[in-house]
Figure 1 (cartoon, rainbow, N blue to C red):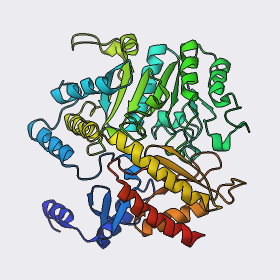
Figure 2 (cartoon, one colour):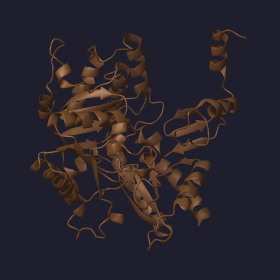
Figure 3 (cartoon, one colour):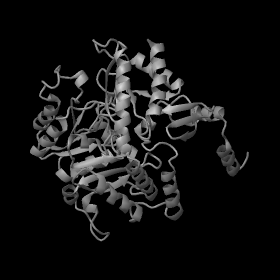
Figure 4 (spheres, rainbow, N blue to C red):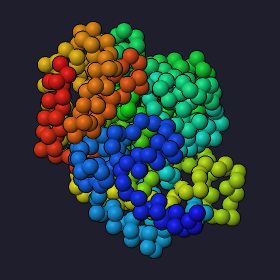
Length: 455
């Protein structure tokens, strides 16, 4: 038998797609569905597979790659950081992390100043929940059905998505779910604006019924992302903020998907003039060039935890909320360059402008088809309801799956958020924020052709 060194070299030298696919079948632990190809290279908003076929990525890799692929500014920042300081844990302070924490305080909604950097959105939400529980000395968390907050043990409890939870029940206790602001399929059978925004009032009812002295926080996505681009009424979050203040409950806003320009603002909560007590960030913070996430909180929350300024102070009494790779310099270098690019290139403004153009065009297409319902979104977070009939609104999951698969096979990557919200099947469009109107026109041509064939 060859030496281990030779076997390693042979593995590393392999590039044949057939052999790689065979390894995928034999050695990968398949926890989710993959796109039906192997990626060879990426550039801008385009993915090229090992056969040379090109795809417009209107998913941005799970709504992550805000600055597009192969961004030289981010790549060079990571290379420079790797050459001088590649590996540190949170036991050491480093300049790159401190700069990122200062920058986040500069751009975050009013009052959010204290942050820690972690590596993924699930972890960020888990840490936020731990902080809320420690700060308030309470344990119950109010969240929404259709909202997604992660795949760890704690965040599965917070999430209101059966698709992710059903194989792992019973999840951890302490989570109370209420109806989302899903006006297209109102759980109360009401019509906006004559509904009194009942979905917001249900949060207050939940706090009251569960005893406000036991409720630590409300956690919510400003716009429910992979649950179907569910955009709340304008009054919704101001009402939720007021409810939290009245009952002395923290408001955690999960901007993992919506942050860093996705909705046409740097943060989606800016659409509603609301600032949370704790905000979680990931995905677009570094465009996943290096995994990075953050939790940023108000000063009062930090003070309530006890902010130890030095090693000599007792951090044990504050509780451990981090992980080994938090505040990692490579991740923070990627995030710094990524945010700088987003600001300098005015990507939130581009998302707003191109997103509005895209939304209008999709509505024109939907108007002509009986199997399309509501088209909604903000910026470059857009959802299209697929139904059996426009009037009846019964979801058509098979039709949505067919459209998405055929679109991918024709060079347009999109996804169907099936079963993430009640009785719904929603096609999501979330391209990188560098997308142009010309790119949108190419995507629309593919989509229109697929829709015509599916009629």
